[in-house]
Length: 312
Length: 243
Image 1: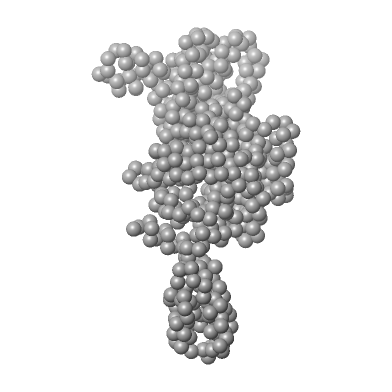
Image 2: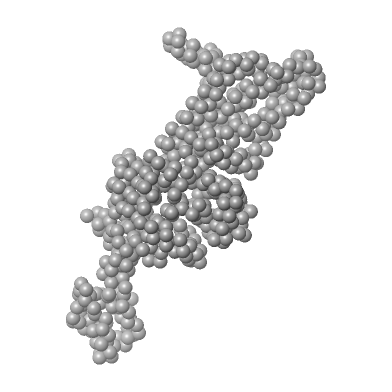
């Protein structure tokens, strides 16, 4: 288990992290969301023992990161933002170094290095200097470094930043594979990532936790949750349709998108409006091209939470 | 202990992965040759010893050692790898000592490569090899003290050039602290202070060793300087690592 209690960091007058508390249990993949400068990296750095907290404390597997740093750090795999490594070293050398400093010796070290090389698909570049690698490979080397000792806790600061879609998919797959028995915390501002790999999401802004829920619950907060969108043909009379939709039972609001051909009906709380709207469209013979039940939009929830709740 | 070894080994390898090591060694050897033979009058003196060789070491180190030490921590901070190193399960002290030992070992290699000088003097005459060995030891200790100062300054600066210049200045003050240049500066200070400062001079302690006099106080002095500056490095790092 990892735990933060009233974790605070200020730089001069600026409060980067302002009394954050949370716990994460094994099996949880926690997505740390927030705008740039929200305090995500600072929080992770405090957990990793790189930034000392101004107040509060953090624990990894029961070991305080301040007073039992070595025990805590040895149970943690950490990928710093930007995946810094020693550029002048070859990939293989670098991983040997990490294995050695993590206390792996002899065949145990060799086996972990070999396994991690295969797992992250970096066999082809083992002899290359890290500074000559592409961004994707560098990131994979950084990940390899973080998981080489099979730690129970993984903290990854923007693990997929700057990767192409295929590489992102690979990294997410890797995280998903490891997630069953580990504690994984990833920070990101890519919202689809939270949906794809996390089973819990914390949104922070201005150093405070604004939401701590499952990604589904977050999505359900969206006003698009269970809304119905209709795409109509060119000859449709949008004004008439909008009025008709507004009169359907359970519809709270109707909005026409800018291009004038998509119209969205928002339900009142907990109302199901899809069937009613479908029936109406059939009865009125609207020139319907598409009818869609919206599940909710994470980016919209994110924007709402971080812009309104952060500045009340 | 093993963490220190692992870090030192990595660091030492890094020297030789870039041209830094070769450039440094070549320049060190060339300059020490030039100083010994041209400025030191090695042949003209007609004595079978290495006094002219060792006599220039403080001045050689003044500029060459900061060139090694400037990158010790400044580079880690600049590339961000300090975040990696400091989040591995090693103490700051282990990291500081490991990196310092690598740099020291590297200067030892450069110093060791001056052995043709020692062969030459043995070929030409019958020098007191005990004196020469003591002088080598003194030279290495002094290099270590310079490096430890440089390590601390490098930890405090992200910029290597700034680290280099400040290190040169501080080393210069330490080198000459027994001399009028520095003592006059303390003109009004009480006798005790002036004497203490004078006792800190690298040059005084090194000169004794380079003449073959092993005084335990000189050896302990250099070791203390090294430990003190390395300890200061850990404090600076604890305070500034994440800035």
